[in-house]
Amino acid sequence: MPCVPTAGEAEVQIRVTDTNDNAPYFSERIYSARVPENAERAAVVIKVTANDRDADSHFTYSIIGGNVGSAFEVVPDVGEIKVRAALDYETGPRVCSPQIICNLAYM
Image (cartoon, rainbow, N blue to C red; front, side):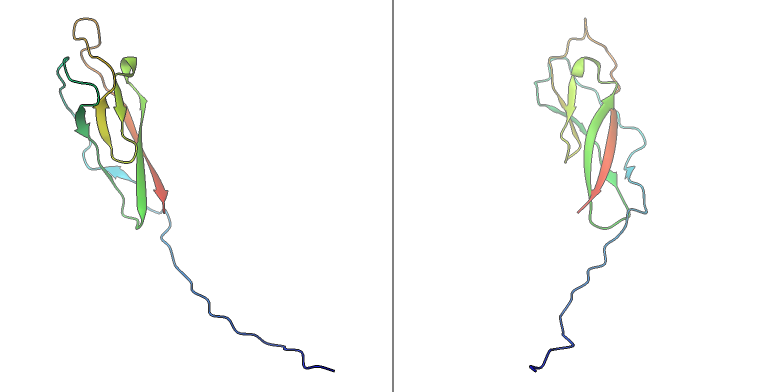
């Protein structure tokens, strides 16, 4: 009868990753900016920044409310708030308070 191996060896690499045990937070509690009604489309109005104490975190930003007439957009992976549509001081809202949310994903 041939010899049947009863043991084997393998090299295994184990990578320990961080868990999501810290909530993301914005660098500023309130961001405020003024934009002229003649601002060009795609002009950057302000940039929001989030942080997290966990390692290897990646943020995506989105507008979840308060964006009257969809006048603004956010660059999801950067946090830049940009003019999306023509602004009109006389007919549009004079104060717009888009609500930004930061979603956290781990790489």
